[in-house]
Structure formats: C-alpha cells, structure tokens
Image: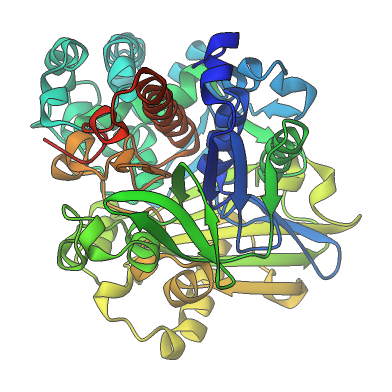
Length: 525
C-alpha cells in the first residue's frame, strides 16, 4: 500500500468510483482513501453491506440477510490498522464456544469447539478411533495454510502467475486431484466425522465430494482461529466500515443506481448515474459477478467473459431462506449455530448438484439471541433458517413449490426440538432462489456466486484487474467467496489499482505516453 507522502502526492487528485457497498466495496474504498485517492462509493440500496447487512423487521426482530458469523477477523483488523484504527474499537466480536452444534440425522452429535481436548472428546463419542487423528489433521492443515496464504494474497491476472514461486511452493501441499471428502478419509473413517470437517464447503455452495481438497482449510480456520458473532449482527461490521469510510472522506451515495461503466477506448473512465456521467481515473465493481458485469460492462470490454461464457459457467447452489420472528423462547439445546445434517448427506448433496429439490434436506439454524439479546424483543426469538437447494438452472417452479417446501422445512425443524414453531410465528420472510435473483440481483439465484472448481479458480476466475482502469472485488473474483477471502481480494484489487494509477502519473510527469504505462493493465496472458 502506498502510504508515504510521496505516494500520496503521486495519487493526489485521482478519482475512483466504487460500484457497490458490499464488504468488498467497503474494504476497497477504505484502502483507496488511505492511499490518498478521491473515492465515490455508489450503492443502489438504502443501506450499506449488500448481503452482509442486518435488517430490522416489524415486531422488533433483527436478522442477518446473508452471512451470520465472522471468521478469521485478522484480515479486516489489518485493514482497519492500515487506516490508523482498531477494529475492536468499532465492533464487538464475541468468540463462540461451542462454535456450532452438529446434529446428525443418522445418529450422534458434535458440539464443535476450538479446544482440541474437548473436540477430541466430542469426536470420540461417535468415533473413538477417529478422535486419535484430530490433532494430525490440524497439524497438516496448519502447514497447508502456511503455504497457500501467499497464493491467496497474490493476483492472478496473467497465465505466468500460475507458475509463481509461491504457487510452486504450495502445490505439493494442495493435492488438486483430491476432493475435500477424499482428503479427509486419510484421517477419519466415520462419514459423520468427515462431515464435521467438510460441511463448510457449503459456504462456497459446493459439494465436499467435488470441492478441491484445498478447502479443508475452511474447517481448520474455524477451529484454529474461532467463529465470531458481531454484536448487533454482521451488518454492524459493514456499518463500522462505512462510518470509517466517511471519516476518511469517501463520498458514499446510497439509493443510487449505476446504469453502466463508460470507456475511453479500452479504458474505463467513469460511470453513468441518473443519465449523467461521473468521470473517474478507475472504476471498481463490487457485486454478483455474473449479473453485474453483464448489466454494466458491454461485451466488447470483457473479451474473456462474454455472455455465452457466463451462461456456461459452473455456479454454486442456491438457498431457501426463512427469517422467523417467534413469540416465546426456544429449547436451551438450540445453540447459536445449529446444523442438521441429513441422514443420507451424500444423496442430499448429489440432488442439489443434479438440480433435484431435496425432500430430506440438511438445515442450518441461527439463534443469534443465544448470544446477543438485541436481536429480538424481550420474550421473543429471531430464527434464521437456511436450506441449500439447486439454483435456478434446475428449472424448479418456486412459486408453485414455496408453500409445500416451507411446510417441509418446518417439519425438519422438529428434529432440532422446535416442535411448536409455526403456531408462534409473529413475523415471517421467505427468500427462495427466484427472490435471490429478482430482489438481490444474484445471477440464477446462485447465492455463493461462481463455483470454486479448479477451472474457475486463480487465473481462471475473473481477474481483480478486469481491464484498463476496471477492477473487480467480491466473491466472484479471485480469491473467491467468504468474508475473509473477499477482504483479501479487496487488498489485491486496491494494490493493483494504486500501482496502475501511480505508474500512470509517473509516466505523465516523465513525458512517457500514458497508454504505454498502462500497456499491461488489461486481462492479458
């Protein structure tokens, strides 16, 4: 990051427009403002955060819309620190222990914890032999993360980057030919134990039986570094970032839609808002990649991601959501995060992947009031219920299916001790794949963006530097989905943008044509 006075002078007067105030857009705006750029952040909603926001509902209930917990806060803490602030002065993060309660429909349960001795004891209750390998799993993944972290921090906008020193050092530890489940078989024989370290692939909208083995680091990060609840909901983090943005001079415009990005030749040079052009030296797009890139950028300016390629891209699954305001309390056995894992989990995942609506689905429930009393009025409970389902490419008639699937999910909740929920519902909001697409601008309702298979990762994922003067941030670009990964992507995109603009200014003052200084600014190989 350019933080020297010389660097600030180099960038002084340069203007950047960031489209979208999701977590990636907010983080990028902070980093660019810290570097001395004039930043305008434009958000179509009336509230920052994108899907990482907390909303208030009638009756005094509060719900996270998308992410319900915070993982590996060190990256965001580093961003705040680079801005001269401490994250803990802005948001209170409660580390959860147990971090979640896994209920296996096939029998047994695990109360997941970062305490290794207790975790071994939990595993031993259902698989004594597997408990002996818990510490080895962590030791091996500690090494894997050590070698892969530099890859996550690296840009992949040229094919040569696939042979970078960091990538070559990491390869022996990644085993790209293995799936997460197959990798876990080296440690755990019981499929329920493997699920305790594999269900996290659903954060990427993927199957543990297909997801590359690299992503065993997801469960490792949870156990090693903790699962956190931001007091007030995940939206509290977005609001804190927006507050810091404003103090750093970022012009945040809410309730404002960008119609399209403008170009001078091949270079992005502004955006159209309400029929008027806002000029910029660079544009950053934060949004659901497959949807927003088609809406804002003409095909001729995205030669590697034309409409036909986007149509053929592999997408994540979707989710069927229920946000429920309940009168009264729920059983004490329902912790902050509870996950019902279907009896035949492999079949459940296979159905989702094959576009079949599961009739015996896995269910995730967040009871934020277990930790945070501010999420519901006294004597009431706010429940967030998520069921992974196929995206819209499956052709499911959701308007005709919604009511019966709602009834099925409520019936599944009884397996978690929630026997009388329906009669006590005082607020209800359902979001199915159609609404994810229509009301939240999610392409094909694929809640977790592009799938993270080997041919849609690293160089093969949409690049942070998408073209001259045009940058991406969010789950659809490198490094991928998940809040800490998106924040890392913001650091990559901000760094590349600052380098490009600083190089252009140096070229201008030295008499070198600007086009020559930016010759490597596009999606080249």
